[in-house]
Image (cartoon, rainbow, N blue to C red; front, side):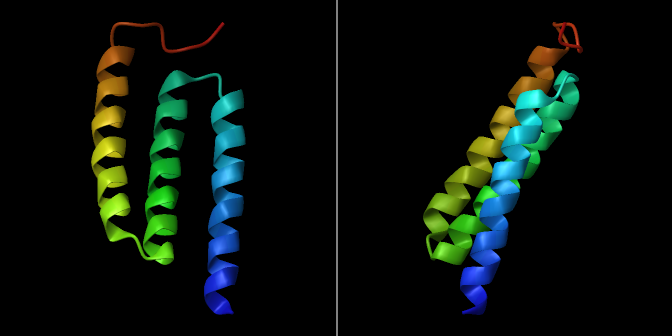
Length: 80
């Protein structure tokens, strides 16, 4: 029963983080919030018992975060 509660809390965090990413005006903050989303997704996958998907999410989340930060250096940081 306790595992279902933790999974529900993680799912609520994922939904809230997604809403925060959508309405974020600062692109660097959106990228860092996306990293938090990826971390919560990794925890969710581990709770569900699929460590291979969690490991893949860690790799993809890390690489995409680095890629976004590098791309942000060539763009304006704030959305208009």
